[in-house]
Image (cartoon, rainbow, N blue to C red):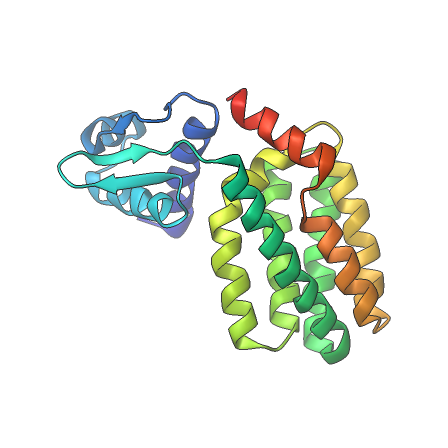
Length: 216
């Protein structure tokens, strides 16, 4: 099965959880999912393992995969740490930027511009992911990049929910523009500050995210 189909299957199950079609505490049966999506049980099992890894479901003995009800304070804490990690990555990227990293960030930023302009939150979600990955890579710190990618995966479902909040798409891209300017100008402290604000979920933004979760 191709990587794109595997990603599609994972995202379909993830979306069903986020929309509350699969409610917290519900058991996800591999055979039922395989029949629903027209695939074998192997890719379903792989998708469930990925969702287990990011904490959206839990694979339990004798029960299999069960949908988790995430605690808002736990999500808030993860976003706090993610904001600090991304701020550091942006600061290092500004100091260590080379031509290859500049090109990668520029290309990802351009794709975000196109998907944001089209109002396509799903496309922007993937383009945004590549934009942030380009910044991690530009830090030229393998350990930091690994930590950023690991926590980014854990927060993936909630980043998707954030992008569905009204006006968040255009706001996110506007923030990207200032982040790119700071990195390309070599202003590490400003890049750090901007990324911390961009990723962190304070005040109304956290309330909006919690409302999205409770309205699933």
